[in-house]
Image (cartoon, rainbow, N blue to C red; front, side):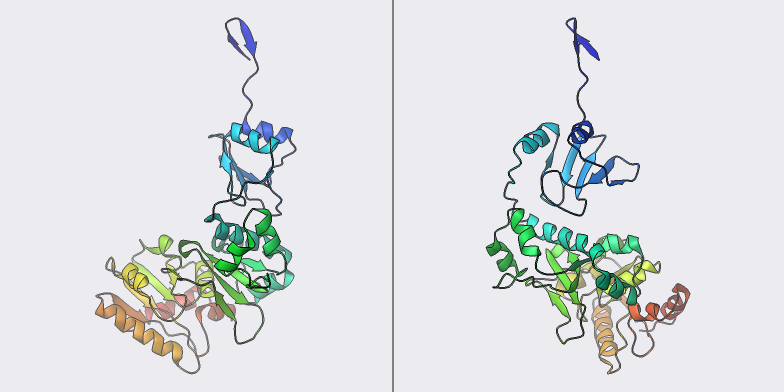
Length: 317
């Protein structure tokens, strides 16, 4: 207790104490400044509400609201949700799909079948799952009008989830989303309308002395999992202009490791990209994988990090 002008005052209430008084519980506590739990301001099943004990502030990645204790009290006393800014739409979608992965045995089995099992990599890439029939309701409860979902391509004209039965991979820098359908039909891959952006994983790999260039996101996951954090994805087999600029900003060795398709299309694409890079002044070499394999399937078939490292050492122009 503190004394001022002869009066005794109660100590100031902390953010966590206020939350605990209202039944809030910590779901994730790493022992650092931040703890996480379910948001008390909107309905959710995946903890996206973070409290910083030291700074006495909060932020919810689900509904986009944050601030200090006075603002939280105001929202708790008047819980009517404010319409979130339009830029939160994709972040809310990413978080929703990410939370659904834990509830789908089929989606998790598919990931395991592709050799992706490292929880840290799955969390870092924010891999999710679209079960269908519930994205529209979730986002509209957060204040996003159905017209905004339709315009962005998240739902179709009938309100159905465009990524139904897809594993989802957020592409936050491009405000886009990649989906891999769990079935075996012709239309297995899906992006939202708009640019796919630069190289996936570039922010973490840009300072490495070499870059491993692969086609897809499962390849990135497999190589990160195997201890090759310098891996980035083209999200296809052709470099766009922003990706080429990223790779030519500084001198580096680029190892192009595309799919070894039985029809030779991956080898031809790797050759075109390596020539494109060399013309731009970048040292580029091609990595050969066994016929019919991509990096993800190479590891899923039992290859080790040492096996892959030998392939890198044997790379040629």
